[in-house]
Image (cartoon, rainbow over the protein chains, first blue to last red):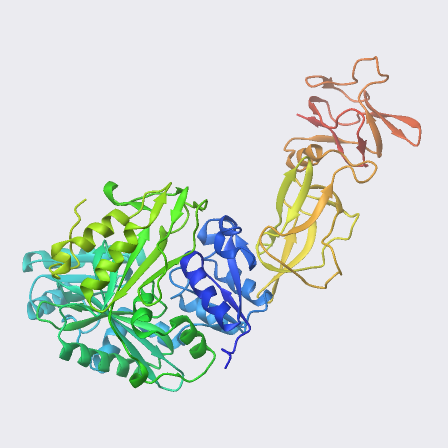
Length: 450
Length: 186
């Protein structure tokens, strides 16, 4: 059975563009790449159909809604895959695609809109039975309201901008003496950054772990989950290592959350692949943070455990086909772990390290054990315009220690010269005793201080 | 028009190529042989159903050559940097150099234009000094150039207000069309 599209526009670059093309090739779908001038002869578009969008600057190429949609239309593509980042969660972009007859490979605009707003998303998820981070019921009216709610939930608390993102418009208050100033500051910064001074309040959970649930839905109300992923090894909210199953999570709490997440997807009319992110608090409760309405970088971890191809399932759902797997068909086995290799120098405060890859030797791919996803090769010049992801290495084993050992072995066979990479940091983390014993949270990187 | 798009200008070896500034469907472009200079309409670029006027950018000057190969589509899909046409500054008798065209478009002060087209000579005969040079003061009535038209030499007399010559724009011996700038003045 075919997927339903003949030509799919790839509205992204780099690793995710190469990833989407791999599934398109397997399914007999022609991918057409929208590229900036800087990427016009990049390795992942060699011998491919491309439409040049504009100059290297993303604002005039990958982020320009009209250029991208026009390019998809004139390339006669009936669907568009947004990948991750860039325009993947832009509601106007999804609407513009649909308006011009290009199927957006993602959820309906209504679900994107709902999950893109902080307090409506929280309310909808609460109604479906997911645990929430205690806090205000929606937007705070004023500083008095903030003080009242903070007293109810207990300090420390976090004030967050309704339209916020990227850590802006956020303030922590640790006691009643700080709450008024925190409210005023968060509100003022939110107004300056997002032209929206509305803020809400949540209890601050400091020693949390980041756990997320991979979901898939079709247009007919069928929803399955592909289990959870733990992404607690982070730096400044940037994930470094992702794995599944999540260590140190009670089976009852996981089962309860998975069932509620599936129910929530049905209730909001979600379609396609999506991820709900949770904070695992010290009491062992998973509390909803946000939903990413797109494919995620770490989707390969769930693919390794389930044996499913998430891009294929996304395309099928977008084409209006019913899900071909039921929850009973989804078998999650073993332990999978992924690390992101970035062109950054972890010894120098993760300074970006663009330049020419004079050597790029990858470890051998071993079906069922080692997978390497990349879009680059020796001789490639890592441009300074975009993100620093070079490749992802995913290892699988019967248990966590076996998966970690396989990953260490694969990483130590990888040889990269010309740019600095995060490989040494990953090797240190994977061998670290605290990491192996799950003694860490999102605040610090186990086994690495820099 | 606020929606007008400027084509991209790429100059290689004095040959100016005009290229599309973004993806779109290009239509109603100028025919081969048409004269294009800054601001000349190059047709329209259709973007998501809207027709955005497309014009030649500053510095563009020449005759349209090398239109895209193949059939003339009513609407041709182009992407960023796609070649629309090559401009040949010497493609017709009387065309000035690319630089002269650019200077014409950029001229900020008063200029004196040739009233007739033909080959421009800056001096009465090869061994004589030039008629005018930068810094000369013109009162009116002076001969400033010879224009050769069909083997006939015509004296071009300055007939404007008193002024000082800033620059003699065309190089000696190039072909001009009527209306091309001879002198930049102040």
